[in-house]
Length: 145
Image 1 (cartoon, rainbow, N blue to C red):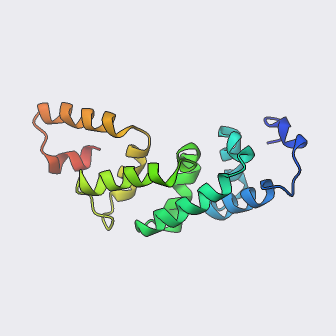
Image 2: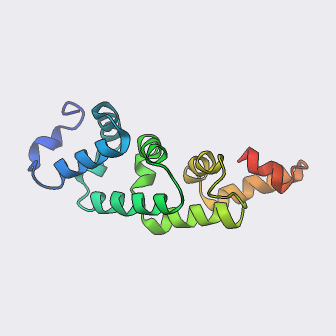
């Protein structure tokens, strides 16, 4: 990790770095996964408000019935998206519920969220229109997204 992120030596470890690393370890479960996240997006470690964003987004995702395991997987796969504002995540989650009609209690909610988090709502709507031109119904699109 230090080899890929030499700027870490320039920082004071008792700044937000240690709490941020500890918090990420709690979310994803292992130090190895934390290292992967930092190597993919080292700027998250350096962002002074990253820990606040993470904590707020954990609360938000839990309010949408995400389990700790799902939150950890999301952080591991999408660290950059997890550091977005709560408003950004809320817009994605609300779009899934309101526009797509996917229930928070559905087994597909997490899988769909991963797909939607990686794309803009506009792009998702355009993709849905293409699928509809080929005869897919809204119900079928639920499984395509």
